[in-house]
Length: 95
Image (cartoon, rainbow, N blue to C red; front, side):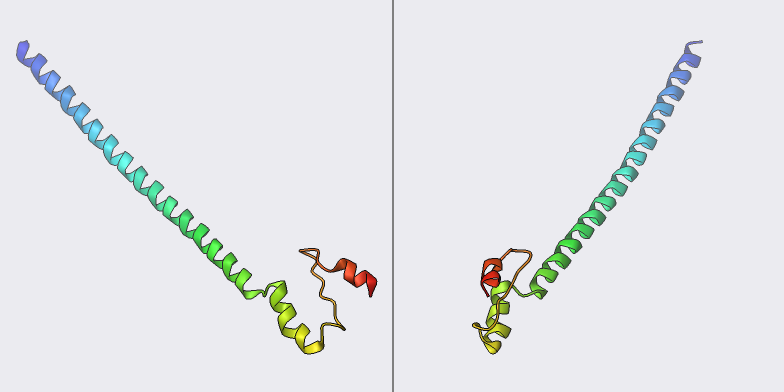
């Protein structure tokens, strides 16, 4: 009778150990997926920021535009208007 109890306890203990190992393996797999998803999201965000920065560099600033084509045409004859920065509206009204 005592031997059967010991065997039963060993069997239950082994089942608990196996269940614990399975749980650890499951958690490791979940952690790997979370890590991959996080890296993917960071890559996407980084790519979007890089792309957005490239767009800003591709468009010249207002002062750069004034220095390029306005100097060729003549600053007295032209008024540069920026709708986004709301520049030179008053100057346009006076001309």
